[in-house]
Length: 405
Length: 117
Image (cartoon, rainbow over all chains, first blue to last red; front, side, top):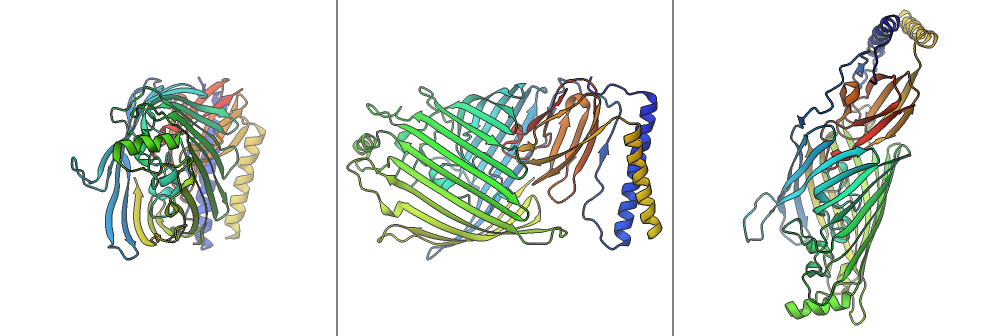
């Protein structure tokens, strides 16, 4: 076993060292108090058991319920204000053994769900089993998050700035992007981790000029799996404070369309870096849709109007944020600015003109206040712009409360 | 107060002396935990080394569990201190560690391994 009992002499010595360390910590704390520099850091626990009882390798355990919530106030200019309980999410997990684990995420969006009406949504965003085989090779199957982008798999409200998720992660990458699938994942060493899945494909009948791929998600509802899409992500965490990622998606999308089967390719890169009190993050995403002209014609035959789906969509954003309160304070305040540029009409198929109102950019400036790390009070003002001389973009002021538990 | 400072320094030196003179080598490993990774996630140590993990979170509480060592501790939230946890790596092998406290959508991805050589 890992922790074989050590010799009695060493045991005694180890215990003595531990006792002395505790005494030193206690003296340090007393000294800090005497000097008037009370540490906000509690004495850290040291677990040093020379012969801990290993857990039974097949111990079954149920994880506590956890979740996150997102409550918004949105006021677009010249439009009525809205108060929206945007997300109520519960996460459930269970370990059948150390090698078989279940994880799930159940979400109610906009608080109210009613059949056949334009109301909220009840979504099963994740529900999968992991079969852990080796650190570098594990198998996953069920309802999965597409491993694409910075936000799709990391979307707890306290983990990003701004009341709403970045627009690139909403319009170009349709987060939350989830569907049924199977795949493998693991840790390759030296800071590299990967995931690659076969997932249910997007449905081209939902593509549009304004929202790109967004309405093409099947969301696990009797998803067609005739031509599964292939997706993957590689992340690098080998250096402190730096995280880099790149992801892709490719798959056919025409399973509901006779005679035309466009392929969608998504490519994305992202990064996060922390330098002292400064946080930087950025993302670039591009979507390519083959046979977009034929797709528009096919959809026009069905609905009577062309959706003006582009051949290429592109978006990027950059966001610096700085934590401004002194480190010794128990609260945190981050000020941020984010520039986003996203165009769902970036390149059109032959014979189609781009709708300029969907060549958009946004400056999102605001603050996130953390009374504690899992609670975020957010404010931002979003300056929207577009390339149209006819359709005006709408600015908005937003407040939000998000929490994780 | 000066006496107190001297005592602290004295006791500290004694502890260090004991550790270096007679005990097994102690390797301090600093680990950062955040949604949804440990950095570093692969840690190599020599057999017989006492490993002291010092783990700080960049966001919420995480768990740190090495099932085969009977270790299962909570890592404090960002700004609330760090977890120190020790174990002795006696036999060569690979020992997986994982986050044992739900921390978000990607909780199940948060894993690592100690490689004892």
